[in-house]
Length: 416
Length: 91
Image (cartoon, rainbow over all chains, first blue to last red; front, side, top):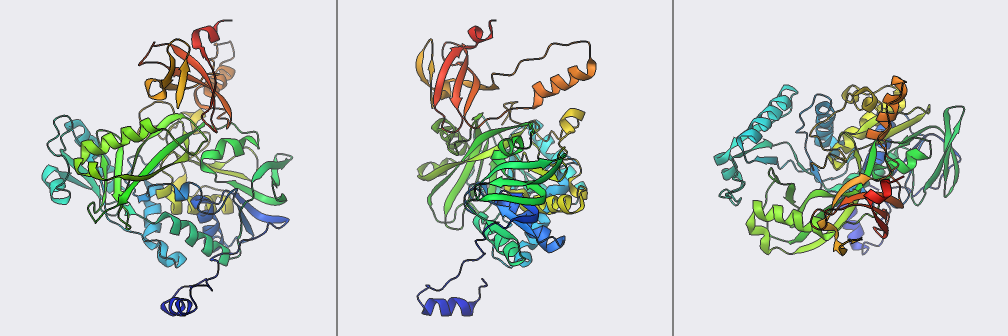
């Protein structure tokens, strides 16, 4: 399916009844070179880059539900690469660069909007920490600008600068950060992969992983057995369950993260703002709704819905930061499953089973990494060696003590 | 989500703090350093993370300040049973 002004006109004249699906709703074949478990953003991006950059197109993407129904449609659409640690920055910056060229690459309007991401600081110590992070970013070629209080005031005069408890002292701005329409990311990658020969199979739940002589042989699914030379797991919140099918226990807990959207308002918040004294982040969608979120609920969950105390806590953070939003009504809230790794960083690695690859542990930061994660995972699957931007995300780093402890925010330290 | 505290009765989950998987047991040190390291790694990092009944540790900080072992279905948040952690840990 391709779009143009002519197709729009002709379909309009035929009452919009002749639009075709964007990608093939494939039935699974008996065997593939690569089977990707999980048709979310990361799985679809992996399929796209396998087919477009590594010449591997005999690929199936198996999705338990429907494309766009999981975390790729549940996040708050923020993209950024404002990380501190050398293990993290290259991957997120690779991802940012891929976002910048994404629409040309997949020929799809994903509404990539580099409206700027501003992290506010509220104390001298926090300013020093942000200056350090900004310096680390710039040493890696990432844009970062440390704003003082007046700099922030020029951007966002409506913030609560006079708060006695958490006065805004300034912020760290990544101007290249912003938002992306998340559904379009799923659809665009799905169409691109499908056009290159990848089978996208929906309503196909993997129920087992076949292993023969320490090597992966295929997967058992609700739509029959599928043989595969390589199997790649990219299932976010369900990582522990799928890895258990291959006898793996992961350093991961599944938690629920909630997000909320207000009723549509006139343009009021031009960029992405995060509160430094609580956990609250907000942006305004192009439809006008304020999209915001904060902490995970904090207990193990697979329910894809959370509880109201967390909603209240997030809203309190928002009110402390920008009291003007108090009169906006919340339209919807929802939850997504996040795979909280024990150090807060992802795992992109081979597994002890030959031919079985794992992409997991993204915590609540998976969406921004979608293109980069897909590219480095495709590289790992095709070449059997880690991509240069993702050498540290090893499964065995926990045994070796080489944690990537960006903020001390894994599942358990309760520092979210 | 409400948790039926055995001392205080049914209370909002916001009164409680979560402390993770209640089935984990800190391993005793033995004579084999490599085995001890592996056992400690398992204890610190690895989780069963089941979708279904899960034994949680909760602390009723805004109530009776008891540590509780709550059996809870992680797929539905349904509470299946609550006991005092102190009783649970007795042999």
